[in-house]
Length: 392
Image (cartoon, rainbow, N blue to C red; front, side, top):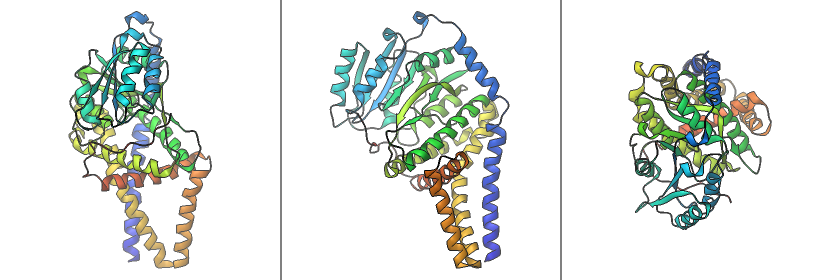
């Protein structure tokens, strides 16, 4: 039993370290990142006349967003972009509150061009995008959520990048988490988002980011394809459909939007597990991307490694921890109890102290369990869900 537990533990550790080690070497430390950031700076440095900027359709899916929709539309009206070149399409997914009425009133009061499109029944975000994008009158679509605040200069920067860099089908920005209370949950999320953004930039330097947040993402309308209505994340499905069409979908460090996150672990767990399950669904739906030479580094390096990180590594982490537990238990119950306590205490410290490496390790293990639960709910339809709390 000891030898079997040892073999299982070492095998799990070896595979996980190999996957993440390859990702660090081939992606995070790739030599193209500096060149990519320079390319973005050059695109932003090109002079442009505000009147020459293209029209943009802002697409906002909503469901019971009465607490935040006024602030959202006010935010759009205050963007540093010609107001006459912005058209808003708000797709209301059969809200049970007065989201639509508030939105229609705010559009009029703010002088924003736009309209509210109502789904006849609750159909989900993916359906809302499938309906909203084809009805847009602009060549560029800004995908954004009702609870996201966009930086004033973000839209113009994204437009200039997508217009001046070849083969770009989508541009996403950074979405730092915002909270009114610092807790263990917010520290874990902030540590995760810091690494998430670094991964997005590094992947974009090679070809395309594997995952972007839909809080702020500019898309070429011509690159959009209808996405599955009840499987996969909206962000992941759209991104992968753009890449499969031969375009790049990049993450840039200069366009910011801000997401208010819950300071409670219970709310974050529900949201994170849902997002994990939807993302894994997107990966499996689009598994034909893997090892496609025409997709260059995305098909040959980024997608295979990310697939392993999402589906294989979480299982191996769990199996490795369980086998390690029984391995130590076979030597001494006291040693096993002390080791278990030390591991849990280590993770606890990672939620309390501001130490980069410690925070990253804690975030890694917590997100492995999010992914495990995501795998558990993989067969569940993700068309609709209960929203997280909204704040005025």
